[in-house]
Amino acid sequence: MLNNKKIVLVMPAYNAAETLERTYRDIPGGVVDEFILVDDMSRDNTVEVSRSLGISTFRHERNRGYGGNQKTCYAKALEAGADIVVMLHPDYQYTPKLIPAMASPIAEGVHDCMLGSRILGKGARIGGMPLYKYVANRFLTLLQNLLVNEKLSEYHTGYRAFSREVLERLPLEGNSDDFIFDNQMLCQLIYAGFRIGEVTCPTKYEKESSSISFLRSCKYGLGVLRCSAETFLHRRGLRKSAMLEPLDGPK
Image (cartoon, rainbow, N blue to C red; front, side):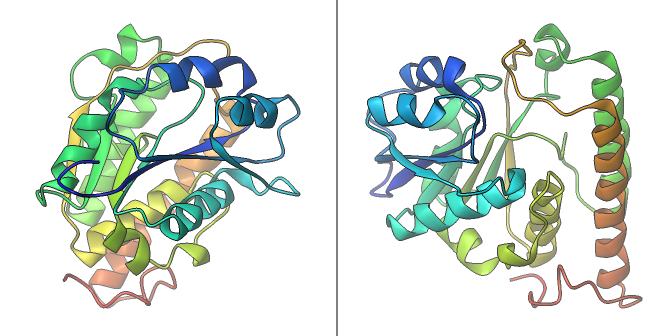
């Protein structure tokens, strides 16, 4: 708990049995009030490992995808009374040791959302991010900043923290169940006028770390640009976006 705010950590999991315990053991003590893991029908024993660690564990009856997993994570966190929700991947790609740095600016009312950026500093390449992913990340981020009128160092990190107000206000259920969910959510945050902060985050690319294929990466990249273009057109009244229509613009 920070500043009397209940902090819930959510972990969207898929085949994370080999890395889950290491991730959990590195979470700083005294900050997180409740742990939630949502298993997206893993083929390994992720659920058994999670329950053995005392984590509140939920399992989808069918594979819903990365975005679908997050929807369940956030719904369960709100049901648990979270004031702040931190999302951490249980594959140890992002260090759990930054959880206090992610949650504190929200607890103090400085930001509504925090992103753990792999691009700030030199952590991405040192941690093993493939060169093509690094270049694509920088190129997409440049275009997205221009389209949505923002200045983030990256839009593609999976390490995120949100205030309760963000999760209650954004129309997340209408977003994709696939990887593009993350960027739809950021476009909604920006359009709604929420304050977004970033903290530099070292990363590790290991064989156990989750990743998507080159072809799916290309599909994701096109989806990202479409999402940002929708925001650009909607903001200027040129074309309505179903992703943004439920929102009434900046707070």
